[in-house]
Length: 385
Image 1: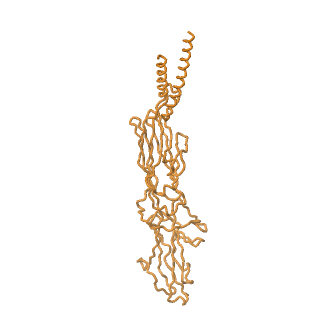
Image 2 (image 1 turned 30 degrees about the vertical axis):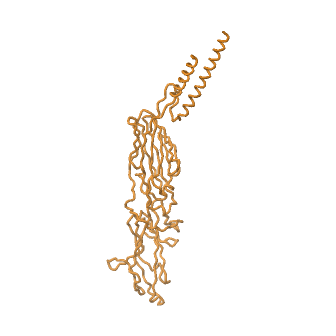
């Protein structure tokens, strides 16, 4: 009976010692910020006017003209969307004797390129316009074959975003190999498009209250509306205001199903002193971010910064104009309990509880073996006695 009591006591001591050896993780502190995305829009319109004396009015189609007459005809191109470059192409139909040489009063900002387009070298801001030319001079020797007939001057206007685009007005084709798409006319309010702020972002862990605080609420406030080719970079300072080291984690959670999130790329880097380490690079809506990643382990009383960069693919087309989307960024952290003298220098971690049980089982087995040997030796001693 004494032997059984010793066995149970040793097993209990083994379990107690095994459980006290590892540092445990305290309860998690969490916070989140909601980031708002919106894309810009390239949208222009063209209207025609005429001037009689000092009075300007809307153009009236099919005026009756005679040879050697000057006709006021003013094509005006207006930018309704975001800042853009514009160009125009002139096509004259049903009269071979009236050419572009008959057109007068081209704007000083307009140049004709070898590709046949007229390019406005000055970009237009929202609401600004530029007049392509002022009118047409009918040749004095116009053939009588055109008497009583109608001719047409067609003007096609096109636009491309100003941001992330640099025309070469000395080249044969200043805009290069661009595919122009027609804007689908969806409703928008360009005045409501987000402009960039100049805010400082921070994530603070307050050890006394066990709170994790992120300020302000939108970490993308310093990013204006998105345009193809945009690359936005910013950073947030993370401070561990406690007397224990913490592990800081991050995950993303998309709030809507916008196709925009499928296209945006995200890079996250940690800046600790002079060291910069990339933690993540990939799609902003990737599964890896949904599940969460470890950003950094921050010592007590220390600060690091995480640098985040958003890239908008340059090949985004009109399908992605005037879109809005939201994504939530979640942050959480664990305090790491200080090591104990019996830890052998090991730092506490998220060791699963199953590991403790397994370790206890191994210790018990070893002690049980020792007791079994002790019992056998004692029996042998009794037999010998």
